[in-house]
Image (cartoon, rainbow, N blue to C red; front, side, top):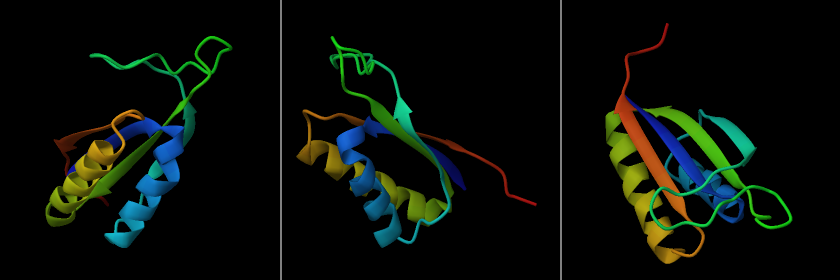
Length: 97
């Protein structure tokens, strides 16, 4: 299983949720309003007058086969919307009880 942390511009939040649902990824925890700045070349998303945009984030624990498919779909979504910003980070996790 993989834990997948997705951080994206709020404009992509619903599209990320729809992508997950389409792929059968139903369980997640979400934060709709987050502040942050990209490590490479992104502008800050701080919800202020100067930097008004905010991010959203989703954390989902996904079976390995679905995780690979989801990560590929998220990468494509990011490539289709390079100006908005979407990042996914993942790591292996144990099962649940």
